[in-house]
Image (cartoon, rainbow over all chains, first blue to last red; front, side, top):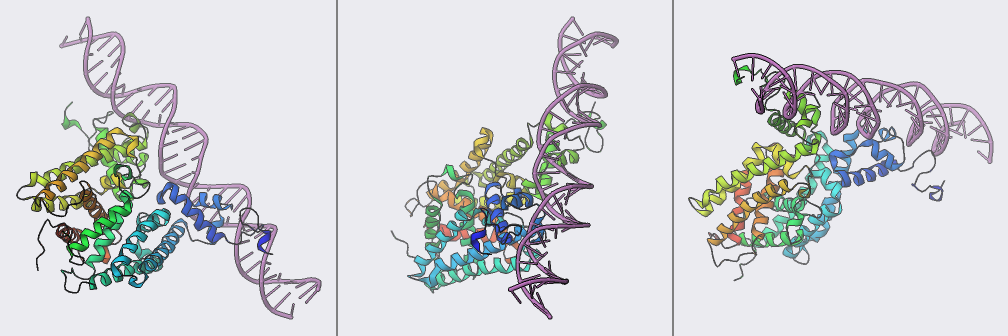
Length: 214
Length: 214
DNA sequence: TGTACATCAGTGAACGCGCGTTCACTGATGTAC
DNA sequence: TGTACATCAGTGAACGCGCGTTCACTGATGTAC
């Protein structure tokens, strides 16, 4: 049986053929619309065109599906940050700016993943895979900030990881407060990108990494 | 009938006497434990010792109660920031640091309010009172940052409100990522206060508001 | 001070709903021979 | 190539549950006279 035989939902008769992925997609769509807490397994199954019991062939329970959305979210997140960094090409500072934009773009393009990653209340202790994926994403940020710091060897550098915490916190804060569709978006006549760029510029000046123009 | 006649729940027989407040308290307790999305009106009523129908004498529906938690949260938040600022005494910079600590302290001490304010998905457009309360809190931040900026009149100052957006975003990011009981708390050997203090120090240096020591 | 009465703030039963999950089942698939 | 059979991945009915909300009600309160 080939793909030509699939129906309009992508199913191949009695067997779906790709239900696991279809459920993850459905979950993302629902989380985007209703938030991580409002997502239900039953509705995801309905959206994928199968019975409410079918998901249990692929996920232990509701939380396991949610965790998988977070895990693949962290993986994609790490990939996109890594790609934006591009090994510091053309310059660490330019690449760093690209990473910031990639951070906000991910939160904008994949709000469901972002929500599952940071707002669903999943604990990293519950799943080693979740922990590994989250650690990898954070490691990208740490390597990026370390490389940027190295461009000004004798500047006022803060202890190792601290700089990456600041970058992460400000990016996260801007994404959740001022991102598209967020509550405070309307109050502010600037895009999230603009706010982050300006903030990082000031922050890097404060570290002596880029010169204070005057 | 005097207060002496109240029973162990604070009730005065058939009439509760202070149900509105008791429901708000119950809601905060539940939100703290289960998140804003997990809170139920029925459970709040149970916790307050009344029937599931009783809350409807005081709140239009579940969302109205949640909105009230957010509103009084914003009011208390604004009060605490204002008190920490203390009109810039003893010095704007010292007072600014106190405001930062007050921000994180509020998120730590009143996680339920903070959650209702920023994570419950309530729209400011749904309630003029909510909008007013949120605006007032943000106004405090704006006045504080403006006063701090004025201590270095000719520094590289960003346009008006931008600085307050940065301060807000970093505070919010740190509170939600690294605050007590938050997912990433375990990863980091620093307190939220320490991270924010260091971040603001660097940021203010970047603005030329405090000198770069070397 | 005492009484009639309007109003307030509760009760408890009931409604329909959607959820997570289990279970025995069955149709489809693929492999061994 | 054909057939028997194990396994896989679905079904659909059922379960118990808690929820938000409505409704007619009633006990308690407070006010007018």
